[in-house]
Image (cartoon, rainbow, N blue to C red; front, side, top):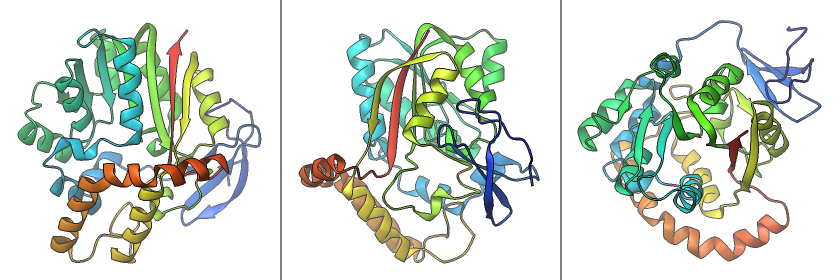
Length: 305
């Protein structure tokens, strides 16, 4: 058991041990609500993702990059398009997966690049989306050494996977120009139903809205917009998806899909129908949101000060 763990979000000097989930010690911050899972044996992170059945299955339904654009990406796009003229900002997507968001930004005229450590996903994006010159497995350290700087840096569903949030956000801060914008999305720890993917080793942190605010402020950012999602469509889709998964640990997300060929067709259809689903459930989602229900994402847009 760890005796002294400093909160990576608010800097509180002593997080509280609240138990174990398999081989991970669970720590909680009473000050901001941040939860961290600590594994005392280091693992090779990029291999966990490159070889994971779920992440590889995602690539099998990724022929249309637009199908990967979700609520968090749309919120970021609205802000960036309103603040910067097309082509008027350099944007780095950290944890870009196969580069789908980079492809979207390029289609809108922005100067965009992406980095990730998942070489399987990067190879797909290079070959299928034509992103050879725009995505790579460069690290943040590589970019700092070459003194690269950006107007906007996005981290969509990244920080919950990190062992060391402080190290990554410090480097991201240094990569941003003065007055630059950071966009972070992550699952909301207040979500109304918790899927298997929100446990270690897939997710190593959980952020309350307060913790996410404190986190960006601690690293020298002023939040300018904050959103909490309530999506009945995504809740239903993810809940139903649990019945199509094996109950094992062959996937970081809690079990690989059964009958992958037929499930692939269903997943493609669900991705194509998501915009219709969002519209149909929008009135219900407004009501649920007003009553405090959340699923699954939250997003903060903050300015470097």
